[in-house]
Each structure stands twice: as C-alpha cells, then as structure tokens.
Amino acid sequence: MKVEIWSDVVCPFCYIGKRKFEQALDNFAGKDNVEIIWKSFQLDPTTKSAPGVSVIENLAEKKGISFEHSEKMHENVTQSAAEVGLEYNFDKAIIANTIKAHQLTHFAAKYYLQDAAEEALFKAYFTEGKDIGDIETLVALAEELGLNKEEARKALDNNNYITDVKKDLEEAQQLGVRGVPFFVFNRQFAVSGAQPTEVFADVLAKVAQEESQLKEVITGDSCDVDGSCD
Image (cartoon, rainbow, N blue to C red; front, side, top):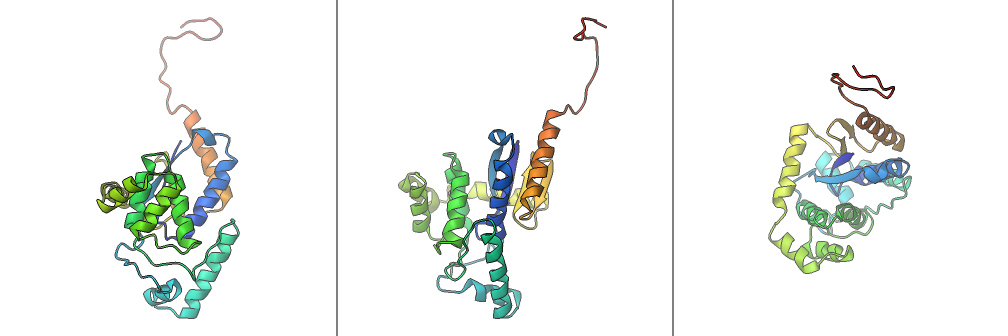
C-alpha cells in the first residue's frame, strides 16, 4: 500500500495529523507493507523569513483579526497537539519560507530518511523554535539524521531538489488539494485534514481489503480443486 501525504512543515495540523495517522498505522496488521511518501505543499509561497516577529501577531494581521483572537486560536491548536503528545511553543516559532525545508525532505528521501526528516522539521519549528528557512539550520538537522552535512549543504545551495518540490506542488493542483494535511491511499482513497485516529484506521483497513480482492474475473477453460476440468 502506498500512502502519499501532502504537507507543509509549518502547518500545525500536519504534525497533529502525522501523529494520528501513525497511531492508526501502529495498530494496522499490514503496517510493514505500507510505503509512506511525503509530498511538498506550501501554504504561502510568498512568506519571507522573519525572525523576531510573533507568529500570533503575524496571523492576526494576515487574517484581519484581533491579537487576542489569534492568541486563542493558537492556544486551541496547542491543546490539540498536546492531546497526541506534541509540544507546541508558538512563542518561540520563527516565521520562515518552507521551500528549502521541502528540498531537505527530498534529499533525505534519497537515503530512506524522508519520514525522519519530516519529523525533525516539525519538531524544529513547533517545539524548538528553530529557523527552518535557514540553510545552516537545515544542514544541522541533516547531520543529526546521519546525513552528510556537506552534501546536504551543496544540495540546498544549488536547489538540487527544487524540481521534485515543484512536481509535488503541481500534483497537488491536479488532485485539487486545497488544504493540508492531505492523505492519498493508492491513488484511490483520500483523507483531508487531521482526522481522528479511528478514521485513518478505517481507511487503512478498507484499502487493504480492496487490495486483497480481485477487481474482475474473466473465466475460461480450467480445472478446479475437485479434479473436474471444463
């Protein structure tokens, strides 16, 4: 089974959705046969890195809402994250463009560490307050994953994986993805948003059942287990 997940690493519900999906996957009998592929998505490609700017204030300005309203929204999301064991520190979060971070995940995929890279980026942004738009920060994360830091720096400096990122963005448009997280199972079933763990469990079971069933049987001359041949 192939599961493709469109996500942006500054999307709070993407990290929450990752945890909920993982909880369902942990209890899925066929988990060893599930291939997970992370796909790039940018909520706001025009974002510029802005260290020192409050993400709460930034959202208030973008949405045209009060600071207090934005603060309450962030508190609610922080609570939702805590319910699945995640620690969100929006007071430390650094506004950043995610284009380089997405390139890092594709670089990591080359070494079968894409999921680990996604996890590291989410944690860096939401929990640790690191600037994921900064190449040196990304290189350090790559090294922590066991990747060659100089190779990582070269790949990011030269935009070696920008084509892969753009391909993901184009695929998202073709599929009509308007928000993330967006989970696609075998290109047959889709789940939008950080749904409850039970929803992911149901979809995993349904897709597995679909895989095990023959779609069409064309009959002809054959012999059966009783020894009769027609």
